[in-house]
Each structure stands twice: as structure tokens, then as C-alpha cells.
Length: 431
Image (cartoon, rainbow, N blue to C red):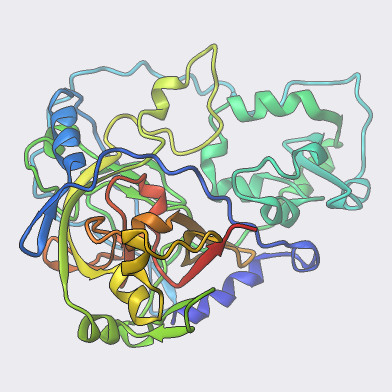
């Protein structure tokens, strides 16, 4: 069923298919701690201890909302949220009432600017010129071709059209500061009739089949879902329960049957291999590691204020870190099976100068077919004490879908973004 992600191409316009370029933006690895020391088949990372102490110093009490839909028998049906296992805390902060007299995302009147027709806007839909409309404003965002966190193909998907239907799905754009920033690049207006007509279409929602979440996993973005546990619950236990473990999705959550899963490994110096989930479980020794994952953007909301606006989502508060015991197989064992001299590389007797990174590509894809990806240094992957694994268990259970089912990478000491839901593995050369 994972191959059914081709359905997402329905949501992309022909311009995306013509001009889309696959480009995975890797972020720098964040070294949180050494890998830790081992005892038997289980390793506890120093990062886990540090993160637990940090969490224990926090005293935030947060709340949640209860809106989720799921796809059932071809129709949308409301479902009950999972039973709340943990008592809700009493509210300690009263939030001021918001004014509903005006929407702070509405563009200001600009009678000094020219009026364009929808036909004028629609002509600007490629990399050479990208215009967008939003609530009657017309914006030339061509300069932003390589600046959008979602990538160039997503910009092209919406170029020449109105942004409102897209932002009804990706509502993190509607915090006010995004539209305020866009005003610098406003070049005109639509007539009131065209403004209404421009937004009269529906953008397909690729998140329809996402899993249900626990009400105590507090969402800071909904699509894609990114949620952090209540801090009073996170600090209760050293090992974070699966339903509370923070969730960082970049895209829709893949829905993969275990018998359909394949892990493809290829690159210089090794023979291309395809492994099923059963292959990983049966061909290699199982290894367990206890480690803490943390999103590199944790506490991003702290940096967002009146003087300094943050445009990258999600705006985490403080809870984008959690600890679990992961079970799987060592990456070095799998690479050795594929023909890589991992022992020689780890000992320094074989130092191929052109192999620098192990590149991970996930099964999660966007509307244009681009997948999420990340990498770790080859030294981490081949280190006999590095504890980098292909994990298929989390706290003794199969990985939940939100955490990479059926297989994900775990690399203790590196930022959570590097630990990808796995589909393809490449050995990256220093070109």
C-alpha cells in the first residue's frame, strides 16, 4: 500500500510535473551526547539522562483539543479520541479573549496598487515568474523560489493560484506574521468578484489517513501533525510511553503493510540489496538501545516574539524530546552484509576518502512526490559502539505509525531529524 502514494500526484498541477526537481534538504547533525556505554544487548545513551534532567526542571501544564477525523469505508466518519489515561491538570493560566471583529491575516487595503485579472495571475506559474493571490491581494514571490521550507515543487504547485485553499490544509501559515511579511512583495489587487472566485476550489488533503493521537500529545501543527507531551506527564517517567512520545512529522504518515515493506541499500563499494521486514529480523542479531530523541527546533516558540518572527514550523514549546528503548538491528551489521568493510573503516585500516555519509530516504512523500530524507556521517554508522540501528520496535512494541512503522533509523547523539522512516539507503560520496 505504500506504493499508493502515487495518489498524491493527483493534487499536483501539471506545472509541478514539468518543473519539479527532487531536492532533499538535509540539516546539520546536532551532537547531543556521546553514544553511551553498553551492557549486554542494551545501551543507555547519556543523552537520555541529560534530557530527563532538563525536562524535570520544567513546570509547564498544557491543554489539548479534541478534533480528529479518519477515513472509514470510503467516507469521513468522526471517531472518538483515544481514552484519556491521564487526569487533566487544572487550568493555571487564563487566556485573554480574542477579538473576532477582524481577521489579522486579512491584507490591508491598497488602492494605490493596480488591479489584475485572474487570467493575468494564472500566466505567472513557473520558475521564471511566480504570482499568488490571497484574500484579494496579488503577490510576486518569484525571489522565494528556493526559500520555502516545503521546497520549490510545492511553490510551483500553487503558483498562479490563490493560497487560501492550500492554507486551509496548512494552517500554520495563518499566524498573522506570514501575511504581514508577504505584504512587502504585494504588487496589486483582485476585484472583489475575482477574489471570491479565486479561492473557490478545494485542495486535496493527503492527511486523511493519518493515525489517531492521544489527547495528551499536544499538537502545535495539525497537518503535518507535530505534537509534544504534557510536561507534567513527560517528567513522570524515565521512559516515555509511546502514546506520549513527541511526534515530528514533516509529511503525511505512510500506511505500509509489513509484508509490502522493502529497505533498499545501495552505493559505492557495496552490492545493492533489498531487505524485507522479515529479512531484517531473521538475518541479523537484535540490538536494543535506550536513547533520547530531541527535535533540533525544540523551544522554537521561545524565539518568536514581537521583535523576532519565526517562519519555520512547528513552534515547539519545550516538550519536543522523549526517551524510549528501541529494538532493531545495527546499521553496521546490515552494511557489512552488503559488502562494506565496516570493521576496517571503524579501526582506521580502510579509509575510503570518498564515502562521507549514509543518506536515508523515507517512505513519506509530499503532494509532488518528494520524499523526506536526512543523513548521518559514515563514521557513526560503522562504529561498533555507535549504537546506530534500524529500529522496528519501540518500548517492546512494533513501531507506531507516527514513529516510523515498520522501520526507522535511530542514531543516538544526533538530532531527531536525522532518524528517518526508512525506505532507501545510499552511501553518499564526497563529490
